[in-house]
Every structure is written in C-alpha cells, then in structure tokens.
Length: 271
Image (cartoon, rainbow, N blue to C red; front, side):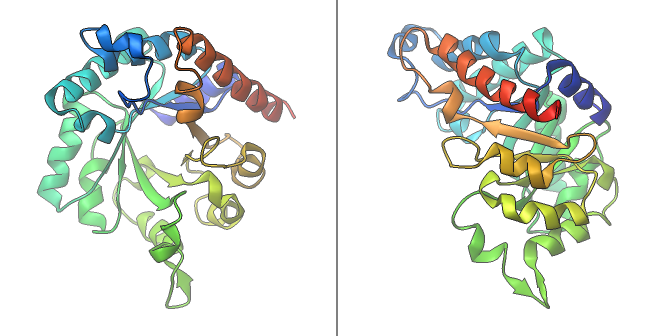
C-alpha cells in the first residue's frame, strides 16, 4: 500500500485511528473460549464492528507467538481476513524486529511476502544494514522505533550523545538510508511535547503513535504538535477499545469507543 492510499482513507473516513489487536485469552469474553479459534473469533468480531471507523489495524505479534502454532495460525487468519475483506485498510505487524542483513531479509519476507502485511515495526539499534532489507520491499513500509511511550524510553532514547539526543540521531541518520521514503516512525503519545522538534527533522513522514487511552496519551496534544499538512499520524488505541467490555456485547462497545475517538478526530480535521 502506498502512502497516498492511506491519506485517501483518512479523508474518506475522517479518521486516522489505528486499532491494536493485542489478544489476551485471559481478557477476551469467556464465551469465545468455546470457539475453535478464540483469537480469530475475537479479532473478526472487532474488525466487523470497527472497520468503518479506522484506517489501520496493528496486531502485536507477541500476543500471538505466546500461544505457539495456534496463535500464529490465528494471526495468519486475521491478516488474510483483512486483506480479503478490507484491502483498503493499512495493516501493521507490530513485531519490533531487526537483526543482521540476511536475518532481517527473512523477517521482511515473513511479514511482507508470506503474511501479506503492509508494514512492520523495526528496532534501529543495529543500524542501516539491519533496516534496509525491510526498506527494499516495494509499496511496503518500515516503521522505525524512534521515541517510545514506555517509562524506560528515558534510559537510552533521550540520552545526550555528542550534544544530541539519541532518538534525534536515529531520525536524522535513518533519512540517509536507501529507500528511506518507505520509513514511518513510532513516537509515543506520552511524549507529545517532543513532537514539535521531531517534526523539524521528519516533517513529511507518517508517525505511528501508540499510548492514547489506557497509557494516558492525549489526542489533542499529539495533533497539536505532530500533525502535518497530510495529517501524517496514525493514532493507535488497543486496550481502550478492544477490552472496553468483557460481555457478549464486546464488539458493539468496542465500536462505540472507536466511534468516540473517530468523532474527536473528525472535529480536529474539520478545524
């Protein structure tokens, strides 16, 4: 999927919402555990109820890998369902991969060719030869971790090295990599005050922004400092939407929560 198609969806739906599909069998409605594939049954219900309100879905692969082969099969069924029924929706494999070149090539092949995701999150710590294999795939996006929403982000990402915060060095260096036009970046919603300076470095790139909702991020602040002329934001909410109810009406309640965010986004877009 090319960036232009994402922008078209944002305009059409008046939304830049990404819904995280982080399935925990201890949190999903108990009646789903009777299903042959509870993980997929949960995802399908969430997708069916919310696809008109969001422009992206982001399964965190840890929540599938934790259940072994059954979990991976559920992930495969989920992405196949999305690609068949909602091909206009941007899909993100939140896998946080990154290794030496030949290994990264295999990770990229797994998520782009085999599973058919539009994008994958990647850790930049090992440098360009660990990221460029992902960037080599046409019409696919590599979403680089820049400044994350967790408390431990301050351990390294904001450390000043040679007069510059490390995350800024990551942003600036990544622009020199081959096919860097295929890069997006993760910036946590809890770091909204950093977005103005981030936009000075990468004014045109899309940012995947987790942390709105359960983690305490504020949508208005993120948009104030991070939105560009093409919106340039994918705001992710996971727990606040998919676990809004543990009852039989969970999908309907999830849609209500997603609608609340979509309406807030629409108001921002129409200003």
